[in-house]
Image (cartoon, rainbow, N blue to C red; front, side, top):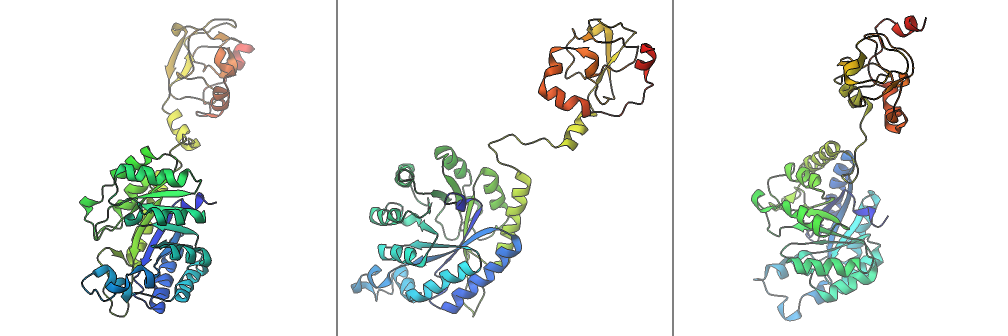
Length: 372
């Protein structure tokens, strides 16, 4: 189950868009849960945890010019309120997921029963945090924004060598991103380089909720992440955030992509009977040119090829020249599989397909007349 948890997983990054207010956070969860349910997708709501009292150095807590510090302090919430949001996610049947930015926050994730941990792009080289996260044994998703290939190699090896379920998201850490920034071909690169892990897409686009998810799914991405927010109490929504009505477009585009891509890319599809019957109708059947006796060895000169192909009749797909007639056949009579001795009459594929394909025979029963 731990690995399957990544399959077709939507990660709805609530981040700090609760703005330190529990009711706002719960409303975001509730509003997106409704859209998730309506579209029948597998989704998580992801929070961000920071042990703020230690995360920011005490001498810099008043640094208004440092946006990261200012926003972290402005959105600080008590642990119990963060726990309440995690519980609300579970109540809606979604996956509880958190990005912990420090070691105390990792412990809180374990305490609250969080199911997946996320490593932010900024932390994929944070050795202390990675050790702490790995010690939990919980499934992990990381984002690749800004990373060099050798950094990703080290990260993937670190978790997979410890048998920790791990997924890696292609990510461009530009907030917001333009369509030309998205670089979806990197999904191909990551899948080829790390074939044994789940590859996903974490994106911060500001215009497109339809095309990129369809292309990403077709390329093999199986986790999909966006920041989410709602219009509520006059708080501005960032350009890279997704609102519920935009998530609805996103989910519907995904479901359409999944429908159109069909089954797994690792195995050959099963050909439907209707498709086979359509193609069989275009294939020429084998007919006798002139009356021939039992025991006759067929050659190309003894037969002609024509449509329609009849039920039980051999076609140009099987005829090899050299088949031996088991009984006499009259001119214009179809050659049926049971009429001949040939190596391919024991081929399981031929035995399975030939008797049932083609049209019902409309010609007179010449075989009866010959036998009489």
